Length: 238
Ligand SMILES: [Mn+2]
Image (cartoon, rainbow, N blue to C red; front, side, top):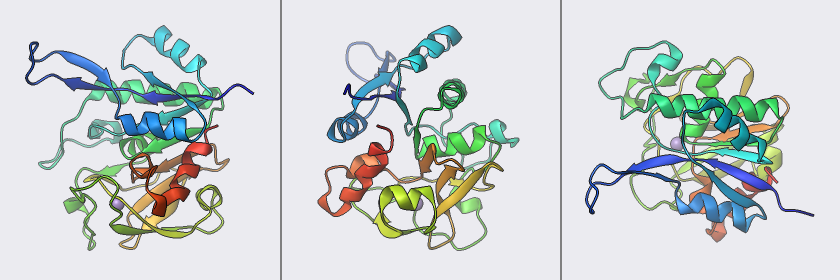
């Protein structure tokens, strides 16, 4: 059987030094590529662009979609003005990612949102975010660990009857954590199926389980033998 083609939404890197300062490059972190290959798929980086019929054709090639990490989501997407601790935003990429999502949903493809990707899915479906974790009034853990991609620093609890629990085969484990924005209101048609012990939403899913979204970075853990089960999130796409 042919291997599944898994699209990974592309970001952009702006050259700071080198011979072309300010030059733009399309890219994703290699861990996304390696995670797809390790789990039996064929990774395609989907380069950022704003041409609607190109995006339609990009999604038409895919058997599954990963919405990758990156910039903060533009708060106008959930009806807020920017607050002081909002990080860098890239509204055009929000549009690109939301278009990929909409087209992939129309094709009934399996979708995995990672970090920003999870936030994009929530906002696209009508949910909201905390622009920075300090705006949450309840006691909140350190969610931006700031070191070692594959270090697992906080506990995640998954609802036992959820699609996430079924895919992961676990309901409690440690994860890495590299987010300063948090999911606030969960979109009406999504389910919050994983939480950190401070109550912060760490995982979302659609009722049919076709969309899974996690706030942590399973791709950075794909080689970590203590987190082998994280690979099942990628196998969900195949
Ligand atoms: Mn976290």
